[in-house]
Image (cartoon, rainbow, N blue to C red; front, side, top):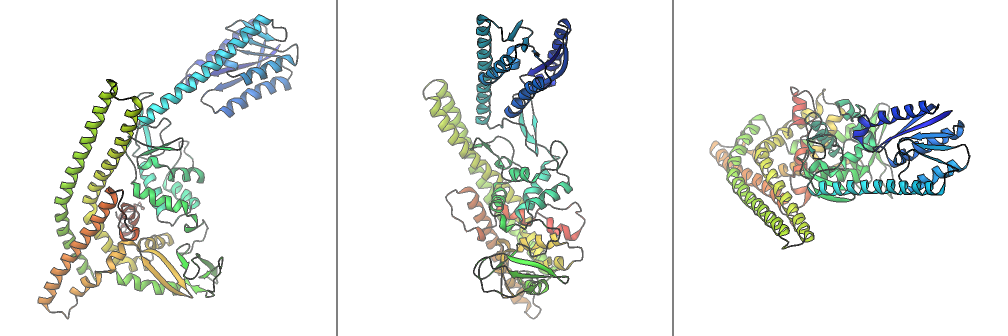
Length: 564
């Protein structure tokens, strides 16, 4: 007689071990003793989704029905069904035909239309026990997940950019040095506003980013990764945000910059084979809509699409826009390498003055962190001695953990600021000096030019062909005093006045840079501080301004566009 076999395991470990094979072997031995022939064996693993389990279960019953196979064999009742709905389905299948039977080998029980009342009672009890086992297993899993979340761990597989290290049940997520650079690059590229999700998927695949199967990360999955707070140190679980104990890959500022782009998709260019330089970069001065670019006779022309009420009619050629763009480059550019060398020396002197400030701030933050640790330890002892309730302890502990996370972030940012203060300041000036040369370079691609524009300008607009540009925070900072620096090196000035002006301007530079640094520090540490986003050089702008984006560090062009 032809029969169908079923094998089912309860965990991923059983699936990768011998449990499935043992059940299949038991089914074959039982079939041999009964003169049965197993036509097909269906395998179910608890690691599969609920829908997949139900799909295999129904496929088994439909296969037996379609091929007129009257007998199903399996190891035990809980291997066949673990809920009342499936049990009822099996009952109905058996009672539809008097020849149909289900054999449970280890329990020496056969379910058919002639099963006696006391045997049906045993069947019902076994189903109830299996249902209890399944529900209890789910409850224990949820308890374990909740506890791991409370300890700052994530109760699922490691996310791209991380790997799980440690024993089963106690694994921690550590940075995967082979993949993390791709994740950083993914966030930095998208934050520039130069990439649609579709274009980013293509570029990151070409760079080498892959999923666990070695395939391309799709558009939907990439959107999920870009929106995942895990990468800056938080955990999102069932709609709630918790503090993680893993090392962040990116800063909170870079993450926030990316969220703005994700929420405002229209500001990012849609993927196209031919991408004009100014696509999604310039708005109509009158109506605020994005300027549309069309290719006509080999030239790009921009115009307002009149999605809103607008009287703009001009079609402006790309070259005409570029002509109006270059004066903006000149206004913030040091006049020569000599000026740049002077700026470098002034920034180094300013950097020395900041070290003492950073040391004092670091000591203050470390003291606050130690105080929180002492409070948490004392509260835990109070909980053990039942001086406070578990609920009160959890409430206080969560608040202290959040405060500690903010302090640790401030400490980390303070260290970064100390290291980057001079390097970032000099890089801004060097980029300003060579911006026009980069734009005109024959080696510069369209993506290079778009990236340069995103560094220099917060936004641009067209009014009947006339371009207006608003500098980004970094270059808005330069426009206020670069003319003073350039004036020092004008040849017609006398030497004495030249030196006096240089000394005065150096002090202004140090004061200005210190002001920017202080504003950045306030922005990081004071949650109640209100800071104008266009007036502060935040970590997001620092990282986005100089993203690591090229595999050829020897290229002068790419060095300027990729310096941090």
